[in-house]
Image (cartoon, rainbow, N blue to C red; front, side, top):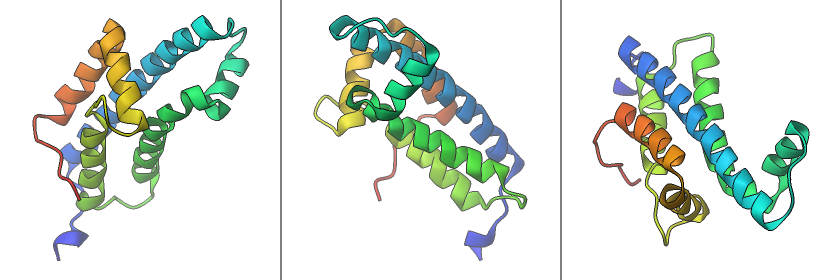
Length: 141
């Protein structure tokens, strides 16, 4: 049965590389959002304060989509048994779909679109992820 296929080694390696690229993108997006937040509020004084804002402030909430995807990849890679190919490919599709910015999309897509418009660092980090994901258009389920 196709759903029971073990994950191919190159899929695991690709998923690990994409995880690393998503983490870099996440750090860049947090930095970008921090800059925006500090312009309209006040200077963030510590990493603890920043973490608290990332976890609880509405201005940072859109980043949770990306955080949750990285956690899902971590969980899949951390299991004692080899994950199924379809599970790994499903996470790659989620990543591919998440990397589609849209001015009129959901919260992540809108904020991501704006970040790409305003930050060369976001553009570079986005480009790294997209290169690893390949050119396939996302499948809408």
